[in-house]
Length: 402
Image (cartoon, rainbow, N blue to C red; front, side):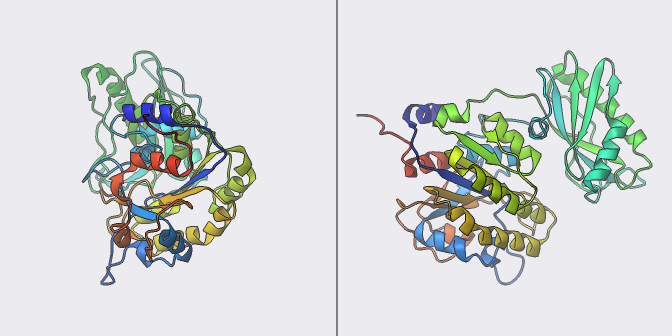
């Protein structure tokens, strides 16, 4: 895909048109009853349905057939970066998203407060989603440890989430997660994925041993799980590749961090969809491209809450007139991955996608959902192909060849 980015860099041109990418995190789903309808197909979405009728629909493969994507590769694909070529750890994204000053050589990890039972087995990977205030108090108990000359900085993110940054000489990020992402098993010891990371693994495991001791009386948040150990990468800049002045509007730190990694301007916004829409409206004249992120559908899917996920999708549909009122030249509605409530987790299922512009050959689809998207003109395509298509519909690509 590096060659694909080079082609985009050669063909991209500046123009006055505007692109809005609306990412409903975890959009794809599965049926849970005899209706055989997914969350998106169950939801009342007259605005999305109207756009699907006049636009183009299909299904996106974020990484590859049968591969379950994390949020970072899911979004990188939507931004036009091949997730198999451009790899980034969750820790860096969380740290950058909360405006942490990540220095060269720092190793960042994304953390969850979790619950261990009397046998030391994980009973809740998210510690009952403790409040953000409680998370801040617990992080203060862990922040500032020093282990063999390595300083450990622990900062709260939101609810049960935190960032741990390991700072010092000789650190390596080739580390496996301590989070098994399963219940009823103990946290994993952090293992080196390369012999040169053995020293770093030993430091991290000593830190986690001290965490367990300090949090022992703080059930439900009596342990921490770490994953996504990483250093800050150096990716081709979004603006350099696509000649776009781009903005990200996201309330969750990880997605702000991802936007920063590719060089988007990250706009300050509030926690609700209405806040994000206000931010879009207030800044619409300043940018060519907007990445607008909605988290609630993914959270509901991970909680196994089918009805709540339907409700989030319906809230997004009701908000669409505000976006359409700005008259974007290209509007894309899709997700970074599927999070079926039936599985309470991310899945490998391809993600519904809708692209609307006045230059579409209309698909005439009556309902925006997985079943009808299978028949749409976009077919089933790699997520990294979406960005060139959006650029073409926005008249931001020149002709290739003579």
